[in-house]
Amino acid sequence: MANTGMDTPTDSLRTEQAHSPLLTEKDACAYLRVSKRNLYCWRMAGLIPYFKIGRSVRFRKSDLGAALERMRVG
Image (cartoon, rainbow, N blue to C red; front, side, top):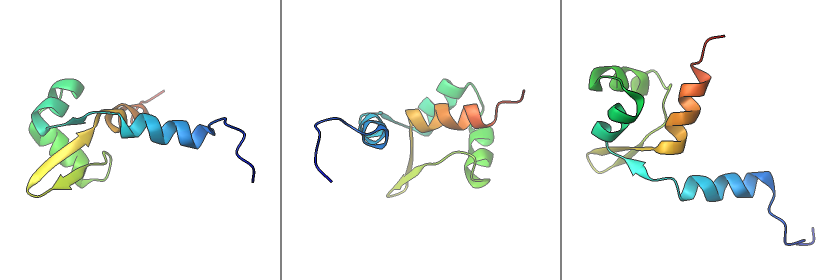
């Protein structure tokens, strides 16, 4: 396939995700306005994707927004 110089939607999504800041648990709780326990439960239920870096847990801000949209009712 020839390169047309135009990004595909998948490429632009990957670029956006790559530049999305990683948040700590505290930052993620503040962003979502939920308790640390609630965030943990969502993480363990597989509702929110996360990164494990050593013993630290980090969340991509764009993933949190997308997860919140998936939980939307109505």
